Image (cartoon, rainbow over all chains, first blue to last red; front, side):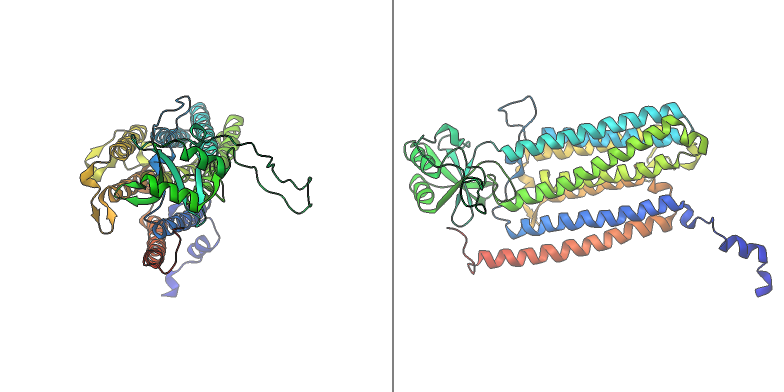
Length: 325
Length: 126
């Protein structure tokens, strides 16, 4: 049998240049990178699922958190803006795949044009993400944190709509100032004080009889609203401090874990989009300079395209698990 | 270079003339699926809020539609449809197997922790 193997075929097998699975080295490695990155993202999303099922009866309702659309101030439009962001990212995926297609036809002008559109789409998405973060960090109504670490919010008794702290909190003269390291002991400082103190919120609440407290516990498909007596008791007995907006420690919309995962997962995804835009810009300039035209192959566009589609793929899942489910 | 691409989706139900046409076709499909998700998410039909296998039917629909979208992004935008079966299996089954395991073990454990809170071993309502 050994005599049937000729010396030449052995050379062809072992001297390199083979393409296992009929994909080039670069493309295969990009696929393997994507698999590992997909596992990283699933790790994050699974951790999010873990925390969510751990607090399944008190998790914030996304429709009540992400209700803002730029230039539509004061209107509650859940999902609209994030649907727009999803569409922008899918659209930039389409222009990317059109660029790859134009690359197969060795059409430099078309690749340039579609790469340009892809970059613009990516920038719009990252910009929207930044705006979404800023709105979330700022918050809109304000809430009170209890001694047990729960969030209580304030609603109107008739309409069941949330009422902002600034609409009812009274104003009490206070000399309390933010403790900064430069003023007192050098190792002691605190974060920015909230606009209202707990006393101001309690006094304002007591003097507005149509206000009720809403807890985080979900009954059916909405949060529990307490009766007036229960509300007063909850606020006065359990109130600890005022929370405005969201950060890694406090979140006026509910459990801090929601904010932590939001910042971490959308942040990690946004970082991927950002690096994708940087890669796209590098490829864009190479296309303009004619690098791939001279090389005779636009495979580099295809490889970066794979990464760009993967970013879109991840967003489809983030969209579902953060905004829909 | 249309010859390098398989130009049909839905197992040949819809056939496209060129790769460019297929790309726009897939975009329309993805847009429709996203629009359905958004509309369902806003109106939340009450009959879909029933629980099925310890999750709302609506949430099952969202997850299935997401996997449908992921399929078309991978198969048509990332050209997985045109790769060899071995490459496809290496990438897809590795990810699916590991992700299913990870989701199962973490969500199972989360349910247990929820029960310990729920049954009053740990108090947090103060």
